[in-house]
Amino acid sequence: MQNTPKSLRLQIGIFGRRNVGKSALLNALTGQEVSIVADYPGTTTDPVEKAMEMPPLGPVLWIDTAGLDDDEVISAIGALRTERTRRVFERIDMALLVSTTDQWGRFEEDLFHEFQERKIPVIVAMNKIDIAPISDLFLEDFTEIKQKMVRVSAKTGEGLDELKEAIVELAPEDFLSSGGLLGDLVKPQKAVLLITPVDSEAPKGRMILPQAQATRDALDHDAYCITAKENAVASALANMKELPVLAITDSRIFAAADALLPREIPLTSFSILLARQKGDLAVCAVGAAAIASLKPASKILIAEACSHHAVEEDIGRVKIPQWLEKYVGGKLDFTFAQGADFPKDLSPFKLVIHCGACMFNRRAVLSRILQCQKQQVPFTNYGVAIAFLHGILERALTPFPDALNHFLEASKNNECEPGD
Image (tube, rainbow, N blue to C red; front, side):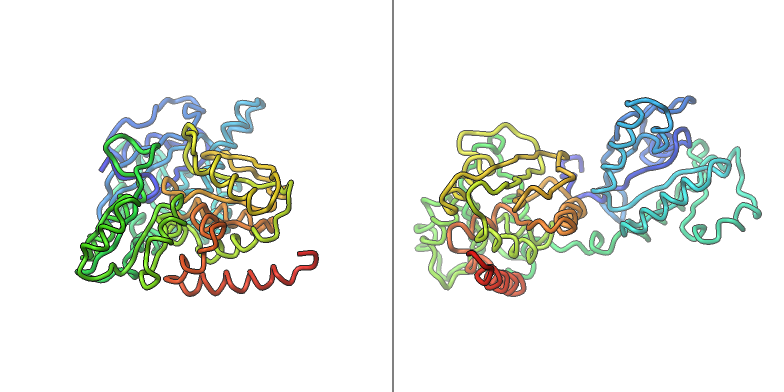
């Protein structure tokens, strides 16, 4: 259970004022002392994460946050804590709004409505009912929200089962019926060819996460995998009685894989599969078409979901910039962002290119896509951009007709722009 990546967990943020019992409630839900609990406000200073199994949802990631009224304390630290808490809004799948009857007010109502506007399912956990029972008079003023309310006591455990049931009932449908990477692309008892160069950034003795996920998903759908480095592809095909129904390659060797495989074998990449699972492949396809409009000195944001030390042939910091500048025919202005450090102001950029986001959940990726769309900045990901730069994006999108049509239409529009 502990090895399940964060990105595959239902991420539930716990929010509210200081000292309403958020950390105590998390400890009660997990049955562990995850967060420090004290009687004075402001004990939790940074988001605290706890991974656990929660049947029938499976792997869950709880995120305990600092009090959102912390900026009422006149200090830079209080404001910083609040800002860090609000960043969590961008990646959660569900919100648990904790309060008490004597604390509930306009602050909580505004927060509740903000979650609704963001399309984030929200549950109100009215805590400390062991010392502050909920009266009928209070409920009369609670008409709009009481259907989302659960009475609970972190101290006595009362209401915890009801709270867990409410979480299951409100879990996003796309999590409960989460689509895999390959289910609609493979066939039972048919082969999938995985072209997987050994990544220098992968831990010794292990595959990188997208390769492992694709393998598992193929097996879950009763297909079988042939895994080979690029120098063994020809031999693997020669020894197969029938061609694979799909070939998936690492993006960095897209051009080599395209040359090695007969045209009748559908070809795509791990990163393109992730673009479909974690975000919106059609948006990424349209974003790739925008590469045709880039000029020398254009500003490009390259964003990575995780932090790592760049290697000599790093795909995001070395290879993609090289390929882009070769395509454009001049120097480009690159900005690199890692982890949560995604700029709020995207207006200077002509394009955002994101990694496959194997360490993010879908909500986090969609939040970034929405941020780009609001500021009218094209968004794409590594695999889609690389396929475009090597002239093989149409082939790579053939298994996904809707995304292919979006790309072809966007390409026509770019060709019609004056000055191109």
